[in-house]
Image (cartoon, rainbow, N blue to C red):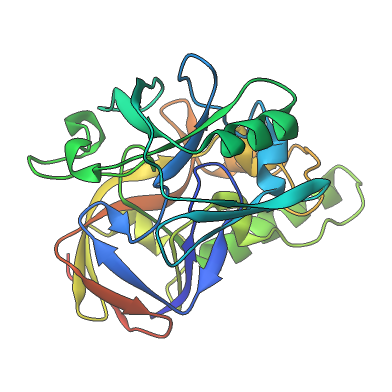
Length: 274
């Protein structure tokens, strides 16, 4: 088994980008989900309500700022966030974040057609992974939510594609094309494991770094949006509900906490430790 892809999402809920390597910090990949878009009272704007967020391409700048691109909007360079701390809601174990430059608020408000503000998580060390989601004392997380790292498997996606095709043929529908892994918004994608073998992993090593399993990843409506066209469909939730449903939810991927700091590279070997 090997690490086939590494993906970062500088802003929560916007599109991600593939990288060849990444530094791993206690709260996740360096630069991953340190920014988020909220409304005027601090509640999170998310893809299920605002799929246009998926059209945004965000890149970190060398000075800890942000470069934003989206169809129909001018490119915008955001300086490092130095605004006031404001209340935020919708984030586990987190109550405040730092306001970004006002130009960013105007840019996202224009994108979404309603008031929006961009905020920065200044210190991920103050945001704990909840015990209810597998967190232990000292586990911390960024705006990612309930775990620092999300891992998925190419073979699991291929099996899901097969199930989707089988269902379409049963319903006498046109055969669909394969799903893009970007629908599932993983940080790490592995290859070479049997389908859904990751369900049983409790500790793994990637390269020289160890990771501890915290929980399986339940899937929401975000996965039903095509990451290119931003059109909404019924897959993959319809098929996951048929083949991967328990406890009233559908599941794909696992969440992990890193056991140390270091660097990952595409091609690193993956070993199951427990």
